[in-house]
View 1: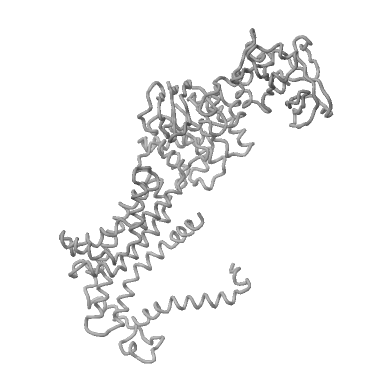
View 2: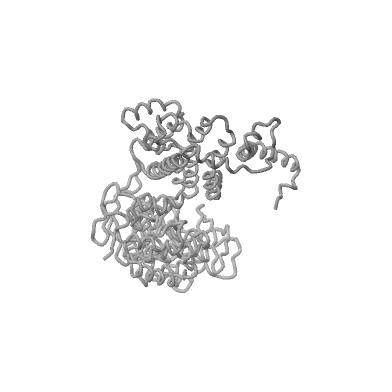
Length: 275
Length: 363
């Protein structure tokens, strides 16, 4: 246990570690701290690094000042919809790229990889125009579909699928398994770490997404929680403590999911590293 | 019932010819071993029977039915892979159950079959373990159980024992022979190991370069090789082959006209005229012992002949001989001749290289 503590240079290592932890945790601490302050405490100079009494009503205010449930529902629908859509599109695509030989395979895969290299900010406008023309503005579809065919996910899953030995697939074929069954019973169980990592990345990415829901919508109908929190700043003037309370509520689901999937994610990254 | 017939089968990968015009009949209920050096096409042949590879030309029939359009899973066969190919995310039980489930066998029936097969191969204790927690031998048994539980008419095995240690391999060899007797199914077994082939097969198909070199039972393959390749591939050490033009007058007189090579098994060369050997039914060679290898019951000598060729002699005499000049005797009936195309040339009135002196006799 703690072998590295006894190694030469351990002292320096501890100092660097602590420094890094402080740098990373400071903004979080400041958010949490602010969420529990009164407006007076927030504005005080020099700032205070502790609060004497916790202002729980900040959370209630954040919840009531905007239609919190409406935004949360939108966020949930769009996030889960994107994850589900990815599952349907990415898994078969990755399987085909990993296991089938077909004409134009390399060219198609090149296109998939290219999508990873084009920043969305570069093409959001034509897509917006396209949605506007086809009457898809302010619908869930417009915020889900563009993110379903994720190049990153296809690429990562293809790498994982390629590591499954041929003989396992052949054994399954001899066991009279259909292609769908092979994907479902052989490939996906072998890719659980990668799948959970991808699910988490998609979850965080979609849940936190701010830019696209902002520029691809014109009304509040399908806007998501991050946009709702942003709105807290505009309602009833300056109140950073309430914005921070809203932010805390925004990140709770992400923390929960990460805690649940942590083991799988570490596995996925070490697996990819070792191979 | 479940005989396999390959007709004019050719397999190419791009321009590379792997198997050329292969005609092969595997009898129903036989234990047929496909053996040959790596790259001879034996695994490809097996995989074509399984349906995992498509033949470029030709047709494959199992039980009289053309298999060209039949999916691997519908051919009523099971395969055991070299690396076992167990499903790592499933328990032993699920591994065995997988094929049954896909074949829509009812649940109670599946349960009964699994229990039965687990007992047969001794896996009952391990049913709920994942393959990674099993030893090599146990994994091998799971692979076998997975194949057996489907009760297929044909078992295909692709070097299934080569990942086991020597002792376990010997044990599994005996168990596979037992299994074949018990099930009465057709076994097609691929190996590069001639000992496995000789000890297990009722029928051996010796392949090289995508062609069948000889197809026969183990006894004939050893005692009556059809060509130089067979004579050299089977037997440890392999048959001694001498170019006739470097042999003495006494031997050349015996050879048929078109013969170019002479061969005899290492254990057929004797240091003395043994009972039954007369000067007029033997030939003699002179040389010097140049090496000696002790293999427990037998000793293998390297002999440098006067004509500069080196041959092996296997004998069971004690004590070991000093490395000195010797004279060797070989009965004429033990000599085999081969022509310039490396095919066997038979001397009139000679059927085999003395099948009379059968396996046990050499001791």
